[in-house]
Amino acid sequence: DGGITQSPKYLFRKEGQNVTLSCEQNLNHDAMYWYRQDPGQGLRLIYYSQIVNDFQKGDIAEGYSVSREKKESFPLTVTSAQKNPTAFYLCASSIMRNTEAFFGQGTRLTVV
Amino acid sequence: EDQVTQSPEALRLQEGESSSLNCSYTVSGLRGLFWYRQDPGKGPEFLFTLYSAGEEKEKERLKATLTKKESFLHITAPKPEDSATYLCAVGYQAGTALIFGKGTTLSVSS
Image 1: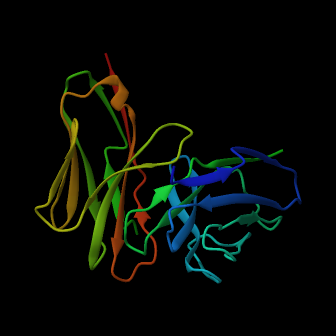
Image 2: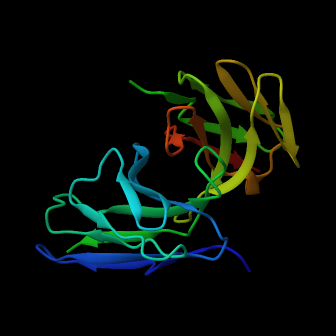
């Protein structure tokens, strides 16, 4: 089945630790995105990538980093510089920008 | 400034009680308006895309419409399984990724 797979579903981070969230898609989509969802805030864009080896910062990129070495994969690293990382993280992909995006099931990150 | 505003924030309905959710937008050069359904702890599920004013799309008890400034998601005779958060998003000419509203949380009781 075609789709987007995020892992892990739940992740716990200690203070000062970097963690990486995985996102893989087999839809053959060029564009991929990372959003953060907080209660009452809606989805906010962290990073996006339109093609392999290229990515751009979104509205809240500080404290995060990404890579796009393969079309299918777009991992997100939450660094220790992100002071409030507890949130629900959603990865999405689309054929191109401004078309319907399809989402993974999300990763819930909690700082312990 | 919010570019996509959804109202109401929360809506409680009795089973069979029809209603509408609103999504207003202020972007220039609309390229598409998208509706999603999100269940608790899950990723958003794509429902509809609308491209131009006057366009309508239907799926079971849901019907989405679009004007030049807003979109409505009409829910006819809802059932408890329609309970979810409904998200609206827009793609626009100068944009690189969809912009989302904060959502409307719908609760349908039997």
